[in-house]
Length: 541
Image 1 (tube, rainbow, N blue to C red):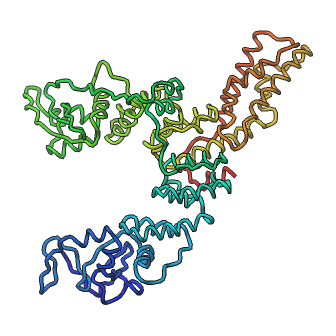
Image 2 (cartoon, rainbow, N blue to C red):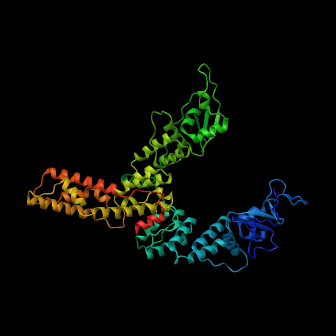
Image 3 (cartoon, rainbow, N blue to C red):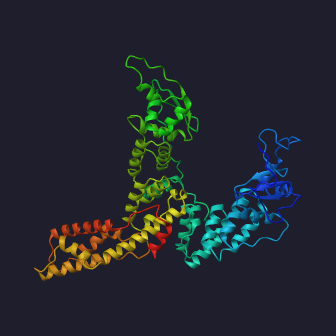
């Protein structure tokens, strides 16, 4: 340990009253400002510092003032504690603790940082006063206050902010704090703003959903919701329990289940686990085997133990996709999601592809797949899910699912913004002069041979265009849904009374509708999760 000299140029003195010679401890901020404070006052105000300062302190050498063993450094013979906060945040927070006038907070972002620190250091009294200040920002920045309140579980403040957001109609605005709340919190705000209900809402916490109801919301299957909601959730069996010959690795799950597996197979499937095995032995088993002469007898495999953070069901699911297991049980969506996260963590690309296929074959709503894929940063799956969302009706993005409690509100904001941008782009494409009509003429015909046929064609096209434009601007989803919906085509086909029609006309209209949908879809902007949010907002306006 090195003693910090009192004249150290690295530390800057804090402003009064945090420069008193009577202080007995020094707090150093991220930007190297030294705050001289009184440990007794700090202990009274903060449960965190009370526990820290109550621990036995290391002995000091009376001559050198150096700590014995792993002691904290000294500065002007005072114990020095390094904090992660910046000096402005710490100074304002300490002014709430000291008998000095309370500081003035102008920006909600400033209050946010101070509140974060007060909660971190368990300063109960300061947190209460800062919550009062937070309520004072509801009129100035209601959406920011809502996000901060939900992030910390402050239901009262979240409710007050939600009422103000609804009265202003600012729920579709963007604020940086959206990335700190769950999609569920943001979703509940959006739903609240569509009602005029005076009932008490819960914003910070998800609703209690029975397992069957949650599965129905994820798959879109109403039959599941009608079953006995009191049934226990299905637990998948752990089937990977085969006695493996010459298995040299014991994988232990977080809940205490052992899996005997082969080091070579693990190393080939996962670079991350290969490194961990190498750390255990110092030998690349697969490389060592390849260097052996044909006549050499391989040494008996060394027994190795790896303890993983995943539970037994997840590890079993990974191994089922890694080994040639004949029959695998059907997995729940939650289990597939956990296994996807583990496969990505360990770099198991083949397993990741298998699990992605299982995800798409699970009869799951595109929105649910989008949320899972976005959380795991599966770019290709996100884009496929977005395309399917655009083909669905509005309920696809409006219906709650349990996966909304994962991920952040920024992701959901970007999805809704992308849907509105696509709707705007689709309307522009549809309203282009003669674009749809030229496709209609190609597949259905331009007419000219019969008055009645011409009238039928004209009315079919007119009704089709009306259906395409029927979706309100700014409300999801975009009119790609109308272009791919059978109801749009039916509205055109139903207009046949009193006119010359032939079965081939229905076939041609179907081909025409499919071509419109294909060209319209290819004209829409692509999803880009890395697009700057300022650019997204600019395209919305």
